[in-house]
Each structure stands twice: as structure tokens, then as C-alpha cells.
Length: 126
Image (cartoon, rainbow, N blue to C red; front, side, top):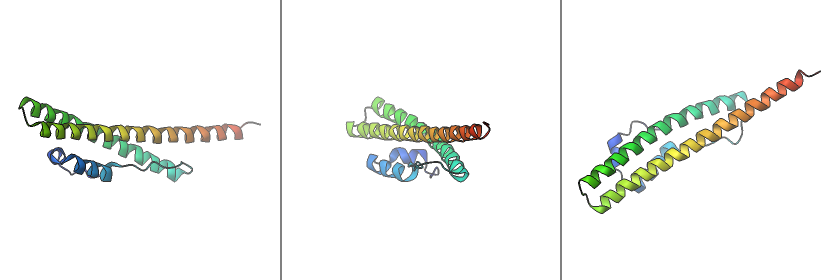
């Protein structure tokens, strides 16, 4: 994850370049399962990463929307406005993907925690 990429640099990228960059830097591999304490700890790290990515991507999407509006107000060429719209859509799409990843990992943690609690309760039943 490279937050050192300047905001204005991202908004100047061609849409396919932006898509490639975000795919490389912001894709999260969701664990297949959470079976151990280490898996649980790693899932917690992933949740933090998702939250940070989501915030970053939404900020970028807001800036892209503002840039698009400015281009419209300045009566820029349609091609430039379309590129700005594409950047905004790409950033929003990645924010949505990140939110979905967060929710999936969070749910996996919840299920694992509930299963562990049920196992503990079953051991205490005479």
C-alpha cells in the first residue's frame, strides 16, 4: 500500500493507469478461513488496512469529483471531463471493493469468535 503517491498525481493518471495502480496497491486477499490465533491476528491487521484504504480511497474520490466539477465549470473538453468521471468512478469502485472486503473479514472474525465461545460453553456443560 503506497500512500506516498501524491493526491494530484493520482488525479492526473490516465484512467487505465489509475486502475492498474489501484489494483496493484489496494487489492486485499481475503483469507479462506480463520482457524488459529495467528489467523485471527492477521485478520485484525487486514481490517485495519481495509479501514485505512477505504478512508484514503474515499478522500481521493471526493477530490476526483471536485476536479470533475471544476472541469465542467471551466467548460473543458468533453474528453477531459469523461476522464475525470472515469477516475471518480474507479476510485469509488475501489472504495466499495475495500468496504466489501472489510465486511467479509469482519464477519469471518465474528463467526470464528462465536464458534470459539460456543465450544467453551459446551465444555462447561456437565
